Image (cartoon, rainbow, N blue to C red; front, top):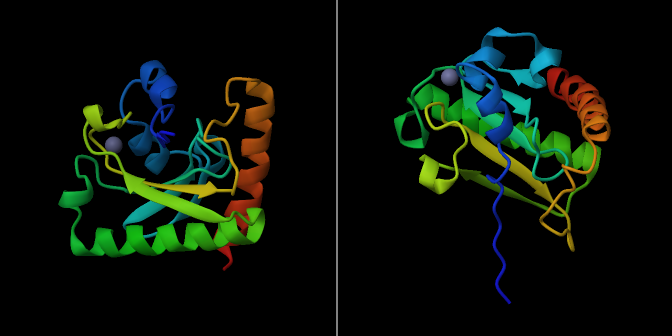
Length: 160
Ligand SMILES: [Zn+2]
């Protein structure tokens, strides 16, 4: 049996087509709740993926546009790592997943929806999960759960 895990399939593809400019830069300069930002550090920040592959799918990005995994400076690399770990801890407390996938998609052929602003995916996993969240089954349900999750995670991450 072949299993293919493809968290990039829905990652910002829709929003990238709808928005001009970079979603991460817009989120970096924008309102936390509107852009689902749950934690801001000095060099990097954490937001919920608006088109999650599983519930709680987080993205950790440097504020700086135009760098990817191999272009982060030391301060960015350290903070992306630490914020990713904090995100995992918050998800563990709120959702109790059985595990996580963490990864970077570099280049469009590798599945990156936004190719010019690197970001780390933090994807909670549950044993027996199907790999396919029913994201298309109801936009209202999804946006409502994203708002609820934003409340939970931003509260937890801002006062650790
Ligand atoms: Zn950007």
